[in-house]
Image (spheres, rainbow, N blue to C red):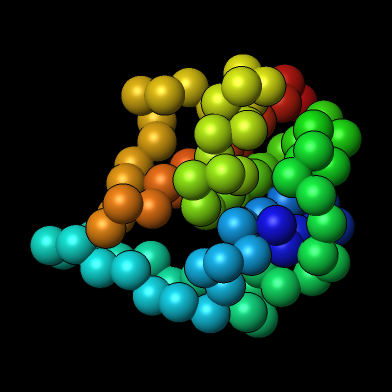
Length: 98
């Protein structure tokens, strides 16, 4: 997978399967562009996603391997996963008490 971490006020993890980087998927009115600029950080094993998600307040996950692994970690609920042309996508936002 490729993964990128953006640290500002929040910690955003953007991860995608390496096979789909740079591709666009469309189905009906849904479209996802797996942008190199957004996702392409470090190339690493999908198992690294566990540590990354433990720090994240926001996650943008695209690709069947990445999303399935996040589901197995219970970081994503199946009902919040969408599929576009056979490619799974999930976004996670952790709301913190202020």
